[in-house]
Structures are given as structure tokens and as C-alpha cells.
Amino acid sequence: MKKFYIHHKYSNDLFWYFFHGTSINIKDIPAPHFTKINKFKINTSYKNNNICVEICDDTNWNRSDGYHLFDFHVYLMQNNIILNRGSSNLKVKDFQEILNNVKDKVKNNKKNLHLFYIDWEGDFHTITDKGCKFFVDEINPRQINNFYCFTNTFLSFIHSSGLNIKNAYFLKDYLNHYKFDNRLSYSIRRLEKFKVNRLNKLSKLSDVYCTYSSFYFNKDTDIIKDDEIVKLMNILTKNKNLKKIEKRGYGINDWGSETNENNINEIFFKILKISDVDIIDEWFNVNHISEKSVIRILCEKPILPTQYKLYDFYNKIQKKYGKTPYDLSFRYNSFDDMFNLLKEKLNTDDSWIEFKSELHTWVKITRKNLIEICYNNNSYLDLVLGDKLNGSLNNII
Image 1: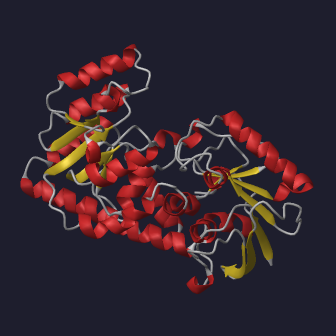
Image 2 (image 1 turned 135 degrees about the horizontal axis):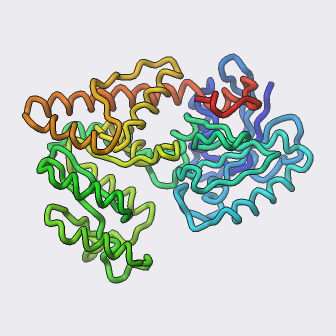
Image 3 (image 1 turned 90 degrees about the vertical axis):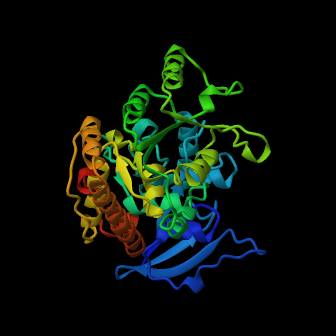
């Protein structure tokens, strides 16, 4: 029997994050209200492999009869150092210090130390250690000790985000009956040249509702406005086809600053209700998914990514786990190709309705397949129990 020691405080969501896909009776997973539980132990199985799961907080580091799991961001959230899994002010050196402390605790058992570093930021922000195995959310062939875990990454948004992203799953029934005022929308928060250029170009299409955040324009913002940012701000204000989403208002309309919690709520309550279809940027140039696509998939909201690779990625995941994805009838290789496709599909009501229906079918099937994949499989356990930790990262997906 394989043993797994999870060095965090117990919660039912934490169990589902690490050990989804196991043969478990829901009644055996406690979710107490008045009684606090920091530790939890249970025997279960995964694909005919018997395993013992022990969520043991900061104890049992000296045990040599099992694997030791440690998630950097869960540790930081449980110790109130950060509020959520999204990007934080911590630098790589801070994570390196945490890693050194964990290595000291596990001592001579480092080969069984399994480190989860899922930060939703791709390889912009990552740490390495030749003697440790990292389970990550980006595909980076340069890091031989990094192993991509799709199901754990996808469920990190649901079960350990600190941002209530799980709620997106239950928005589906509301959005499917909502009457949208616009066909498409494209929204940006962070001012970057390529985004502003895309926003300006899409605003030429009358059926695309284009918005940008007021954050940079508020007098109390603490963001550094260099010459490039000021130039981009001027471009936005000159385009009368753009709409500004106000973060600050009186009382109940004061959304505050550019925090992760604020931005997720803004997606939920402002962005999702704008249009039938959301045009989104997903960072596939660094091979990782973000909350942008995950939220839309969970709530079954049709999306049109500026990089077609998003469709390819999710379709490939579905095929890997024996599911049949929905094959789209179109393809584009660049943003300009996507723009021309939109002009074609928006040309008549019939072509738009057909296009919108196709996008909704894709997200509907993808949503169903991904949830089934995540709760019938476990990417981390497949790697460990399948003895795949000595293989190349390129073989994982």
C-alpha cells in the first residue's frame, strides 16, 4: 500500500484537490463546522491501487514509508501569508526559503518529497531544485524534474483557489437563461500594447462590446505610470467606441483596487453578463491555462480565444483521457485571422446564430468531459503509481 503524507491542515476541499478520482464514500470525508480538524487519515484506492492518505499538518516528516506532499500556495494561504493562489508579491527567493525549510524537515528522505508549485503564472515565476520533484501547471520541457498535472491544476481553481472560483460552476443555469445585449465582448484590465491594439481593432466591429478597466485612470492608483502606460491610456481615451468599467463608485459601487478577489468578482458580476460570447486572451505562449478559460468553461460560457491553441489544448486533454471533444468547423492561426473570421460570421444573422451555437456546443461538451475526467482520474497519482516520474515531461500530455 502506497502512503501519502500531506503536510497541510485538513479541509474537505484540500482532499478533493489532492486525491480526486479515488474510490471514496462522501460520508467518509468530514466537513465539520464547529469542530476544527487539522489532521485526517483514510485508506482508499485509485485504479486498483490501495493507498493510505494522511493529512498530517506539520508532522510525520521523518516517516520514510511514503511520499511527502507539500503545496507552496496552500501553505501560504493556510498561514495567512497570501489570500489566494493567484500572483502575489512574493519573489522567487521567498519560495526558495520555504523550499529550504521543507528540505530540512524531510532530511534524508528528499527523493520522496513531492512539491506542488501551481501558481497560474506559467514559467514566468518558477523555482527549481535538481534533487526535488515539482508538480506544476505549465509545460516546460527545459525543467526535467517538473511534471505537468492537468487534473490537479484544473481543480486548483475549484478546490484551493481562495477566490471562490468554484461558484462559476453553478452560474451555468443563470447564464443559459440570461438575455445578453451584445453578441461579443472583449475586456482588458492590464494595459499592454498588444492588448490595446486588439481592443482598438475589435472596436471597429459594431457587434463587439469593448471595455477596459478604470484602474489605471483612478487618481489613487499606486501603479507606476511610465511613458508607455501613459501613451496607451491616451489611445484608449481617444477611442469613443470603448467603454470604461468603473472600479470606484459611491458605497456599494466601490469595487476597490486591482486585487485578485476584486477582478474575479468583476468577471462574475460585470463581464460575464455583457455578451453571448467572450473573446479572451489565454497565455498559451507559456503553455498554461488561467482563470479566464476555466471560469468560462465552468459556467458554460462560449469563448473565442485570441489563440486557437486553447481549443487544441483542451481537445487534446479530452482525447488523452478517452473523451471525444467537439470538433470545430473553423480554424485560425493568428489574431488577424480570427478578426477576419468574425467579420464573416457577423455578416448575417443566420451565420452568427450558427457560429454562436457551435461555440456553445464546444464549451458544453468540454465542460462535461473535463469534470468527468477530473473526478475519475488524478494526474498526480497517475504519475506516481504509474512509475512515470523518471520520464520526460514531453510525454505527459
